[in-house]
Amino acid sequence: TVMKNNDKLKKMVLLTGDIAVLYASLYLALLFRYWQKPAAEMWQSHFWPFTIIFAAWIVIFYIAGLYDLRSAINNLRFFRLVNYSLFAAILVALTFFYTAPQIGITPKTNLLIYIIVFYILFFLWRRLFNFSLKSYLPKKNIAIVGLNKQAEELINELKNKPHLGYNIEFIISADKDGAAETSGIYIEKNIANLEKLITEKKINIIILSSDLNESPSLRAALFQCLPLKINFASLPHFYENITGKIPIETIGQNWFLENLSEGNKILFDFFKRAYDIFLALIILIATIPFWPLLALIIKIGSKGNIFFRQARMGQNGRLFSMIKFRTMTTSGNDLSPTAVGDKRITGFGSILRKTRIDEIPQTINILKGEMSFVGPRPERPELVTELEKEIPFYKERTLVKPGATGWDQVSGEYHSPSREDSLKKLQYDLFYIKNRSIYLDLSIILKTIATVLSRGGR
Image (tube, rainbow, N blue to C red; front, side, top):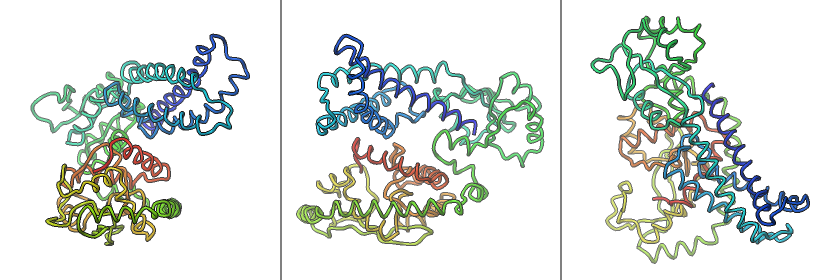
């Protein structure tokens, strides 16, 4: 709760700053254009049309990930995100002003000046905010109890992203032999020193990566620290909030019993089914006139069926036939998973994949109730059978309907069918299953649109 409130405050500051920059840029643009304080009538004539534009711009910034604190760092990727989002925002503004003459203004020069002023102020504001997160804003001092693979992954995540606002002061690990530190962080082996260290290092949060039931002495030592008014968080919970993933190796059956309260999702599932049907019908009606043309080009390009059907595992292990426009040649195709630069993909098939047009027929699966727009991607049953032998809780990703897109697909990473990548994909899928909501679904849909427009698919 402390972490979430802290993040909400930072995001609110970020959003408030963006809004302030939007309106300040408009005021300065009018000031520079006429070299005098904007009159009330002029300000009013520009205020409301630009307010509509600003609302659209905020949505674009969100889709681009500019309100994700994990990406709030002054690196090349962040600046590219800013440039892409501003370019899209400018196109929206131009389209709005020159296709809606009834608003009474067509600000050619004013809009150009505004874009220049906003671009400068926005970059300065965002650089200041990111730098403040990293260097000046108060940090939370944390300690980690127990050292394992997930704890080390969390340590690397926090060290690489200091703007998240956490300092790892020390690690308690009585089982650690050899070096007295890891990744430059001091390791304390003596549990008796715990209370003293917490006081000296001014610890705010203790991350529990060890099972306290296995160490009564450690549990007792931590219990003695309760008067110090510090917060305790389990590693899975903290890791989830930082990375947007669930640490598979540190959870057990109890995690599913405690976190997957499916009875509380009945109302959400009702609304989800409603907007699945609504969106699927809209897309199907809007695109079906073009299906004959797509079918003709697919047939001319290579021999085979227009549609590609394949058995996939749906909710609770039920099999269904997923349908897509065919993008691969049929001759010599062993139906193995797609690889980078796969030569089986036809020229037109590559276009269909990059634009995700090949997945439009999945609206039929959605209308039949076999899929949803958002959920874990459906896998082939033989792959699921193989992976569930190697990866704990792999089949639990079928607790919800599979989706045409999902949390993993908008994570910014491509995951192959390998065991290692399937494990990472499962981490994202379990995060979605636990936290799914209308807000998260909308976020995933918007980010999927941004992904398609920015870099295409495979």
